Amino acid sequence: MQLTNLRINKGIKSFASLLVLRLAASPLNAQTNLPTTATAATTSTAPPTSAGLLNDWLRQQTSLFDNFDLGGQFRPRYVAQTYFAVPGAGPTAVDFRANTPQSENDFLLLRTRVHAGYTPVEWLTILGEGQNSASTGDKRHPDPQADEPFDLHQGYVQLGGTKALPVSLKVGRQELSYGDERLVGAFDWDNVGRSFDAAKLHYEQDTFWVDAFTGRVVIPNDNKFDQPNWDDWFSGVYGSTRSLVPKTEVQLYFLADNASAGSPKHVTTYGKGNSPRDIYTVGSRFQTLPGQLHGWDLNGDFAGQFGDFEYAPGTPGVIDGQRLNHLAYATHIEGGYTFTKTDFKPRLALGFDYASGDGNPNDKEHNTFVNLYPTNHKFYGAMDFLSWQNLIDPYLKATIAPVKGLSFALTYNVFWLASTSDFFYQVNQAPRTTGGYGIHPQNGSFAGQEIDLIATYQPTPFLQVQGGFAHYFTGDYIDQTFQNLGGAHDANWVYVQAQFNF
Image 1 (spheres, rainbow, N blue to C red):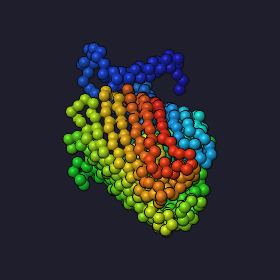
Image 2 (spheres, rainbow, N blue to C red):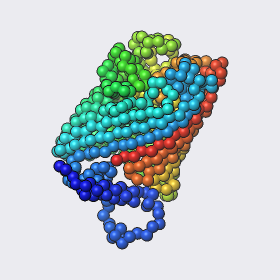
Image 3 (cartoon, rainbow, N blue to C red):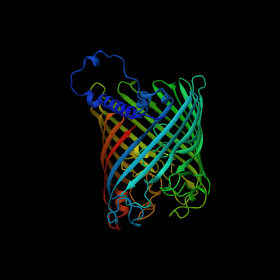
Image 4 (cartoon, rainbow, N blue to C red):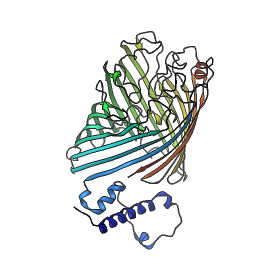
């Protein structure tokens, strides 16, 4: 069907008008003192929920687009950091080392996602989502934030999921996200993110839902089509209910990560695939429901693991190349209070994270909790130095929203190693083993402190601007690691980011 210039111009004007209306409805304009027009004063019906900027515009043009879901996301981010590890710059270019050959690193990230979905009938959805992850100026090699030129982030078919048929099956490349993503998440903060080639069954009723899934994590591979790790299966059953405990959502889960000997041969943008393992995680999570406890809130996670684990060949200071009996556990608890009677809605929270470490690297037992597939950026400091492994982490958090659309979050973390007979683990769960790091049982366990300040401004549902600063103060463990190697140095981190959803 051909369009005339008149219809094209009309469509462009319609899209521009829609964009202006969306911006006018934003919290920014809601704070102004402009006089209300007569038309606005007489309108009492709330606007319908937006299906997305592009979807809204297309559906205004013709009803043919009612069953389509078309849109995307554009997210640039600038990062500047000092005294972070710079892989590829030499064996001494590690976190916090004062005489690192690369003490500064700043770079620009750009992630673009576009998706197209189609729901011809209520019980069938088909969706594909492409992604470009670009990185400029990063001194790390290989660059862990690049995955170009274009790749498939999601591509699946979903069947069922109606009121008459409350069971759905989703098959294909997809994100998996459960709880607060402490163990299983889409890792959206990352410039590449995470997805799985998986099959997932979902059953839902009014008071509970349960998922059963199995699949393989997709391996980011710059300039090549991303493939799953064929030698690492991740499966689980995850359920949630609000009827078990009053005013609380309770979740129970069983997760299995089974990696064979071929798994480490899959080279990723971040390193190698998981070492051989059969790890089973049993746990529970709870979260009080919003507004039910007069401003108070409480959430927690409790997880235990069993199975077997094998260190990657060549890992120093441990028994490598053979399966070790695996027993480990981790816990998280946080309580907060929101001052609901004030306009700024300030919230104060106190939390504690613990993950077991290994007490003896020379026995045939592995006691380091394995963090699985999390979104760790949200939990153990925004600078992304640590994971939920061999960790003790009490923290304080304060948030405030002085005006609609604008919020500030201040977080203070204090870190100890649960065991100095184990490694100091990175955010990607790899042990630090080079540049002076290793197993240092003679060191103090205090690893340091981090303070983060994050500002978020969202003037419209389609645009969010965010920026932050963080500083890491090294502790005894790091200082003693480098005391005869030129000393340790605190680290700094600054970023500015914009996210536009269309």
